[in-house]
Image (cartoon, rainbow, N blue to C red; front, side, top):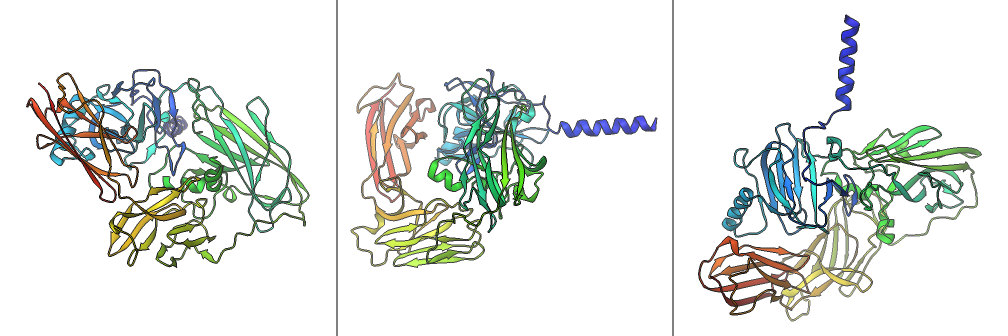
Amino acid sequence: MRILLILFLLFTSLSSAQSIYPTDYFRSPLDITLVAAGTFGELRSNHFHSGMDLKTQQRQGLNVYGTADGYVSRIKVSHFGYGKALYITHPNGYTTVYGHLQSFSKEIEAYVKKHQYEEESFEIQLFPNSEELLVEKGQIVAYSGNTGGSGGPHLHYEIRDNEERPINPLLFGLDIKDSTKPIITEVYAYPIGPDAHINKSKIKQKLRLIDNKDGSYSVENIEAYGKIGFAIATIDRQDLAANKNGVYNIQTRYNGDLCFELDFKRFSFSETKHLNRLIDYDLYKTKKQRLQKLFIEANNPLSIYNNNSNDGYIEVEDSTSSVYKVRVSDIENNDAWLQINIKGLKSNDVLPLEDNTTPHYIYQSQDEVLSEGRVKVNISSNTFYDDFFIEFKVEKDTLTLHKDIIPARKYFDISYDLNGYKTEDASKVYIARLVGWNDYPLYSNTKRKEGILTTSTKTLGKYALATDTIAPTITPKNFSKGKWLSKYRFLKIKIEDKGSGISNYRATLNGKWILTEYDYKTKTLTYDFNDAVSTETKNNLKLIVTDNVGNNSTFETMFYRK
């Protein structure tokens, strides 16, 4: 009897360990076949994707359902990011998130608009208490859209634990058809130690990838010596979509022994910014390739690593033969294998690294100040991951601060002293980051204090002073002065600024503030007449738009409506 009890407890423990996440608690947020446009943990610009992007058949307005009982605990409406987003907290401690919504259900929409009109702001964040907006499983809570930073109609869906850490929704039984193997597209090898080299070079090497047409890959045999690391570019595809999605798990083995694992089950928002320590940031910025390093460098705080031996690096000895293997898998256990045969060969005739010395050196553990003329750069300790030689040059008002090939983990400050600066109107001057082949000036959030302009940034590159003296433009899209608009549901106005960019806007109807929704992708403001701010026949509309240096334009017109 005692043995049976022990076996029962052991089986129960193992079953519990294998089913940490409930697979039958949450229903689908949509009532269509689920197709993924983006997967959990996918590599995005400066962050990991924290949920699933679910396709909505290239349409907006599909019903979005609460996936379990709970209450609306947070509502956020913004021009960027998730756009219109809803957060529902559930009795089991999890929170589900629904982003890029077109609109909310009737009750929630009324709640949101009430607060938007009270605060006279489209952008708003609300935290209803647990009794205000209750939700039942399967209840319509919103309608799918394309708001915020969305690149096309879809629903962003997340599941977070009670510590606000996002978890892969596929672990909860979300059904996405996937019998397709991941694909490996690039392989690089990195000499790490002082004596290390690959194919008689200390420079990282792109290896010629061979697709074996059976889901496995190999590369041309390499010669190497010393401490070595590898990186791969890889994607996953589901059965019903051609999207290049992120993978679920990567493991490496050296001569049969597991030495590294990268696992996308869960992460915290505090660490997502360190994605740039996982990828080869230089290659991403220069060639738009996101290579995932299969080794862990110093000052890497990511929690997505498991089973690491020697931080994923391997040591190749002279006169040896060894095999390095990589397994890439999706959550359905479809996998692709890469094999790298390595001949250990120490060479005395090795191509050295390029000389990148400059007069300025950054110690990542120390505060640094770079200054020349009216320009100053303040870099606090631990802003960068590594020590490095930095290029610092000032020509007239243009600052060259290295190239954007080294990631920063914190903001650093760039300041310009405008005291004595000759310009007709210094209030219209701002700090711009110069981008593209033509050095286009892109506004960098600029603060002014006693003649000093300062911007905080995490991006190296070129900066300069720019001037904006041109006010924004305002153009009605679907109406004209004196027009009858009785049959119109929406009023649409295009607002645009080609200099520093739009900072804020304010619209009134017969002197009363009206809620106008701004879509930065189409540069359009929209007012919904169903808000019923005015019941008068003759209506006077006034709109003031201000850019980031204070230039403003005022548009006034009159229309009729019954």
